[in-house]
Length: 151
Image (cartoon, rainbow, N blue to C red; front, side, top):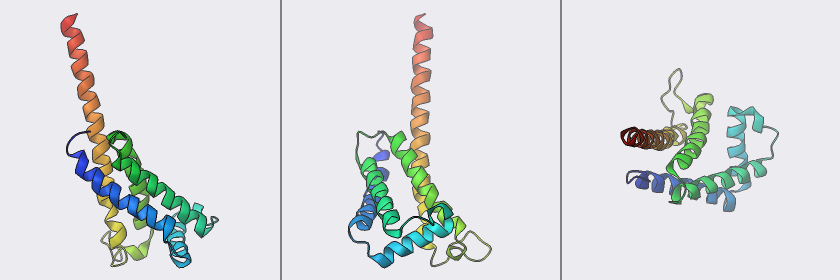
């Protein structure tokens, strides 16, 4: 893990972990129905799922992802892939829900601002992955150069 990974993993990990714990422990029936309804309108595959089950599954997933981001032994590449996948789903929710955007634009409406900010998590996740892949390529190049110089 590189030094710049620490603050972004701490910030996003703590935020997502808290969100997951809230869903698992404090979400009321109305909140569960609202979360499920929003997700179902953007992703029809969730329509047949019970709102309670959906919210508990989402909370468990958020708790696992938040924990993984906070654990230093989880590679930044793996944490970045998880964060990118999760936040891509949230950005997709934003893009598929017209009421979250000002008419005819990508600019968020007041209702969309809490979800539009998830684009930053997508950028952080992608940055972790790109940096990890770049490091692996650099290490492989150094290793190959050492073999050539020895041989």
